[in-house]
Length: 235
Image (cartoon, rainbow, N blue to C red; front, side, top):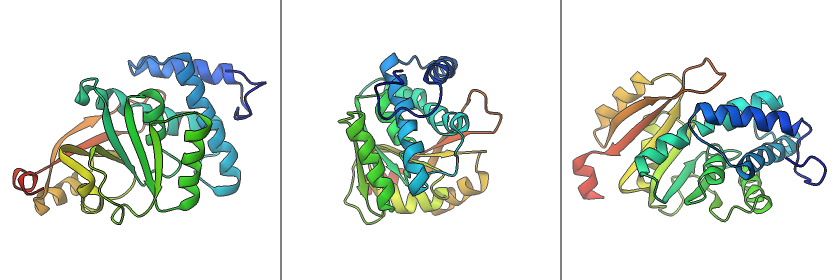
């Protein structure tokens, strides 16, 4: 990582952070090219710079930002890739904030088209700046409440700590194409929320995948949801 020429470089030792990120990605069985590692770290650098003014995230420490934002978001990439069998796909990242996990998905998988949506205009402006600076043509951002925006018809709609499963399905479910997936990144398995989804009978929990985050002891999982058979036909 060039710490002398690139204006987006954060005030940390780029070589040390790059080595840590490469190690973490290898533990996830997610080999990253040097250009992707540079892009992820430059994204984090931009987040730190904007964070001083616009409060994109409560995390300020670079090492914690690397772990809790970048590495945490990387954990879902192999899971999505397995579901998609390596093919292209369209993603809608709901309540994306500063672009998590959407920006990470767009950097690591250039064949995935990712749209980040958030109701806070400055956060959307930040994601657009990231797409411009890092030259990510597969990344876009929309300033809107998800329930008010035009249908996205996405293969996968994803959220990271956005809302309860029931609210997530009610607000964002209409953006999932027929046969697509509604996916929520969570901490521990949300049994009460899953029960509420079963009761409303429009969406069904297809499964829960526990996620391993290197260097993090806290629980992480992803909840996979699909429309019930009756609602799939109706859609």
